[in-house]
Length: 59
Image (tube, rainbow, N blue to C red; front, side, top):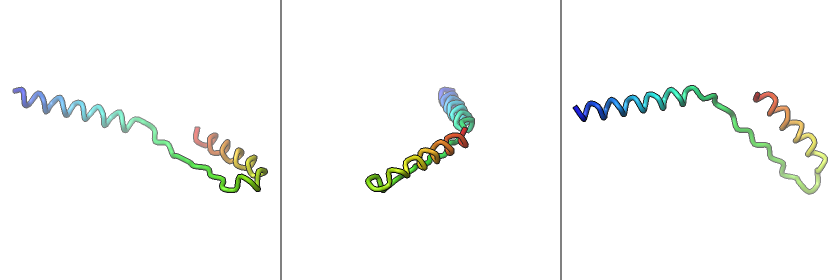
């Protein structure tokens, strides 16, 4: 009887874990990278605009 209750408890825990994992919304990770930091400081405004556009589209 103890063996059956252990298996039942294990199945319940795994079931609840699976349901909660499936309920979470998946999110993408976006990495913005600028290599030329010394010569092209003007590009930072474009990079900031791109970051804002990606953040707005993600919501």
